[in-house]
Length: 183
Image (cartoon, rainbow, N blue to C red; front, side, top):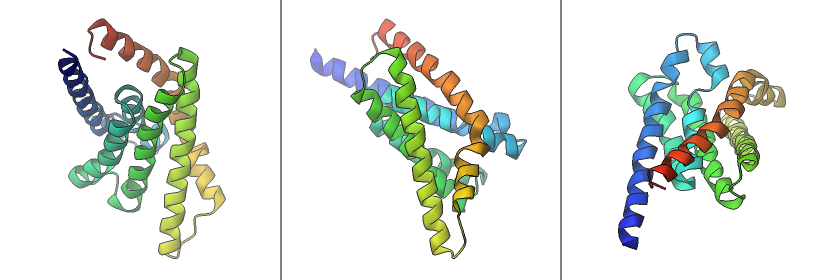
């Protein structure tokens, strides 16, 4: 009986991870017509964060790493280098750390905000490190002002959307999984 339950949990996580990957692929279509708005809202970040919270660090990392590369290879957006390349590391960190922090912290609603903010900080630091490394290899500059503009000020609408949407969605999905005994 325990083996069936374990298999059911693994299958549920796999299906949800596939759903979150599809959402990360499709959500940018809603904002993609206006590139500036798409960059500010960070539509791929939401499903990756949700995947980390719901499916755990492994699937969060996988979906985060695959989503930007898949979109770049199939649609040409975001451009593979340097945008999708840097986003791959950023989103992989988002998904992984959202799942990791979810495992570490108590399973109480206010902690979702702490976990989310920590995952967002780590993901943006990883993005900055990758952009800095790319700049070092290509003999271009990536000053602190560019990091702050890309990671913070240029993404304020996306940061707000993530803080507003992710915690209640995590709570809702958790309740649905419990209700249908899929956790």
